[in-house]
Image (cartoon, rainbow, N blue to C red; front, side, top):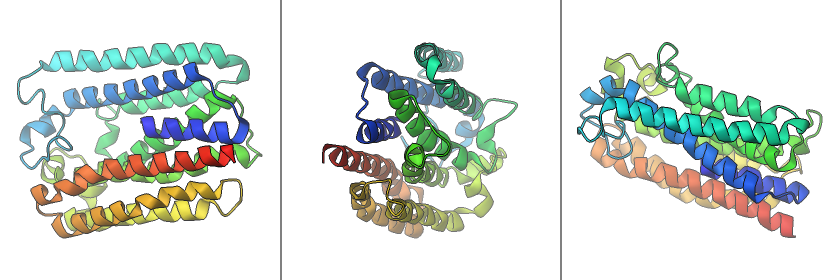
Length: 293
């Protein structure tokens, strides 16, 4: 969640020269709290899945295992998650109040983030149990955070201006890559998830086709980076993100070859968050250098 916040802030500075430290730090902390709240609430409501999961690849899949190992009582895990959401909501309320004259954008984006995070595994919606789960994660941890970080700096958005759409366009590769993080982590969880009716794309496709789908996601992310500079609003230096592709290619090969063997798949589980982080930071550096030049 921190990576898209950095990217959105870098785009704002490159395009307008705007940079407000306190807004930047609050967005970073707020995004981290929503992410933490989502993971903790997920641990609580998804524990029936985690209890029967014997193929998990720690620490990437199968939940945090805090409840399963008896380290923390389930009620405390839920309480900690709710505390994270409450703290994020308080920060969001301040940002809405401080920027209300410019419009309700932060209120809308923050409300969507909290809603999707809380109901990801919470009944009755259980968004993560349905096939768009990967798309929901991509939208929230890619596009919404990038756009929010951008908007909080410039406090302006024009539907007619291509410049205003730059953070949305530039965040699409990050959205795809964070969806790939979830996707590859769902492969070891396939049996347990299927048993409890978690019908995300990996369960629908099966392990072998899901591994190929994971490769398609990674390739699509870098094609998006290559194409997004064509309109001219996004600087060519954003192509620095392509430097992470060799790492992505290695992860693809591991996943396609080892999808049926969770321990052998583990390097791909570990590498995918690094791919997401490296790509986003390289793109951010590209925007910052373009701003200096």
